[in-house]
Length: 331
Image: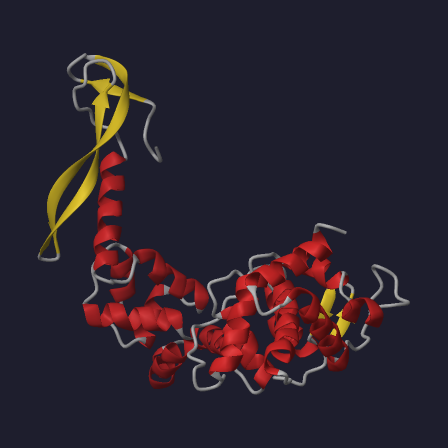
């Protein structure tokens, strides 16, 4: 166990013995309510007498508090730490920005329970930069120049990756708000399949942006540039309600594409796109590692995937699976 020894002193045996850890249900109060939880108990392997294991009580305390906070929807200590990291801000400046006492955030990090009101406020700040932006506008005069510049730079950055001025940006943000782990490589391919399946399902083009046949598959350059700071890591954006920006029919297409293609990583999606005519034809004449900016036209995408729809029926999960298997695994 973390921070626990392999053997401890058993007062019954009067010698150092190995031990076993069991769990037993206990009742305990937290914030005025009673909770039942599983408490770890260490017993001597030789005689069964309860023994004291350094670190075990701390582990029980920590997990009990985490459970109670979860059940009451209170912000966790690690989430407050995430706020500091997200906005590149120290404890005291964050307290000032939020209009709290100088040492409030520091005390929360030590385990002090915030009121439900402040807990909800901190959770909103973590989930969306727009909330911190509001507090920052009201309280920035309470910060020194360095702290102000650091927060200001972070807010501008989050505004840039969460802003939307075009249909493809709304689709990209919808994808990034999904439950799947999306990198820039996989995002490009998912946008490509959304464009393709919108043509198959809806018989229309839902965004008009240029798609290029890069060496790692189809890429929409402006979206790639927008999220390139993430490199090969998962792209993380704030949760955004896009219900008033994308029609239900478009959302249905995106959800279907995600369910069928987002289960694969970017490299697999790259391999799949490399097996398809739109990328192969646009990339023709270029070496495998040679940079290419040739356009994959919407007409090429539409013609190919409508043809594949006739063969596999891409409106069904089984049809898409058969299509993917035919290109990746049965070549």
